[in-house]
Length: 340
Image 1 (tube, rainbow, N blue to C red):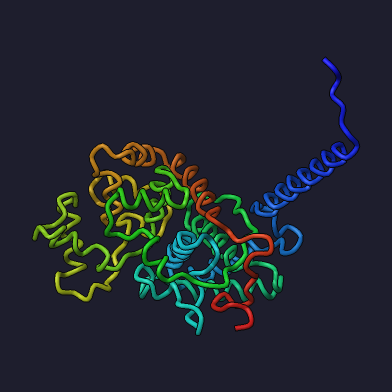
Image 2: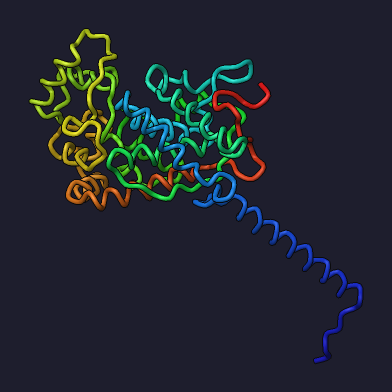
């Protein structure tokens, strides 16, 4: 067989194609590297940011024992809508319909003033450097660790959105009234699995809930005219006293009746004892044949297992579609887009 020869023009073309392919490949690698969050993102630009966040939350806890649970809820409600981009913090404007007015947040999401205080403290130390989205992630970690829960290395480098998505908040955020299959689908839609679902639900081991989010379980569950049969009867009687049938619906109840301000694994033993406050809590254990049941049992028997899974699931949740690189901006005021 005669040897194959290449003309100089085809050789030149091949070189050019190789260089182009290599350039595209390098650009892709750089883009991927740029898009990665990192625990050391502010190591040189704002090295004390974690301490600043923690100090503000410690001060807030002195007058508001609920604030830790409220701050982690803000991070959760932010990440499930267009990713972790601080869109939940934006107020209404001529071009923005605030997520604060979406059904899952209206008159229940709180802690915005503490986020503003954190932002002010961070701006005083490192102006124009730390995003509001990263402040929410750091605040969630501090809230858990200050309440006796695990700590983890928060991955950072998010940037802030330029818009909000109120309709997305109405449809994407899991609510206390949905079936386990619906909740599982919402978690799956943002790349979170069943273990993430159970672990992150464990954040209900501290904080409060308004009666309106579970009163249907107390009197007329699913239109039956009777209470939810999965509710412990003594617990039911206690809840009916706190939340009378014709009450305002805004009275507060501890999510965990045993240790309402501490972060521990009591949430899971509560489920085993039919003392899950929200329908979506109890269904993790009471849904026959559900994959969540064995995970609940594991976390109930081992606080270490829960803490390890919770920390990893918080990292997983914090990775939902972050804006990085040159996307978005670093807001100087978390409530509004720069220049508005």
